[in-house]
Amino acid sequence: MLQAQGGMEYDPNGDYGHEMMQDPNQYMEQRPQEDPIQDKIQQIIEICAQNNAFYGDPEFPAENISLYNDPEQLPEYAMDMSPVEWKRPHEICPEGTEPKMSKDGANPGDIKQGILGDCWFLGSLLVQSTNAELL
Image 1 (cartoon, one colour):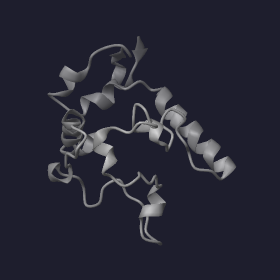
Image 2 (spheres, rainbow, N blue to C red):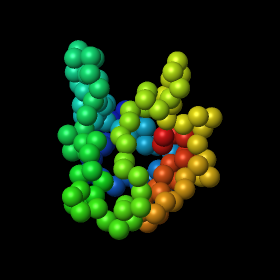
Image 3 (cartoon, rainbow, N blue to C red):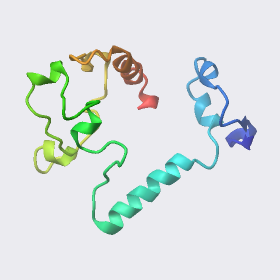
């Protein structure tokens, strides 16, 4: 057990979801002072800055292996599609503009299901888009 802000005990293996339903701000009170995920993010930022490089996720490379079970034998739905072109945000944005995760906020109408049948994943994005504190 760790001591969280406000004197509350925090169990990293605990289930806090039902408690957040009543008061979304309660999550912030239950977070531990030390956050290993934020520490890891900071380390990655520092390494990239020191090496003047962009981050590449070794577990999700910008290759077909990240999209298909067998990148040599594409699924039927991918046959009629043009090849995937991997880009970084700065390669998509017009020159001189800063990439943004969402412009003018997010709303449920921003999410559209494609041919992948991933409505369960998109449903979670929908919930997040209606709760700005989760973005």
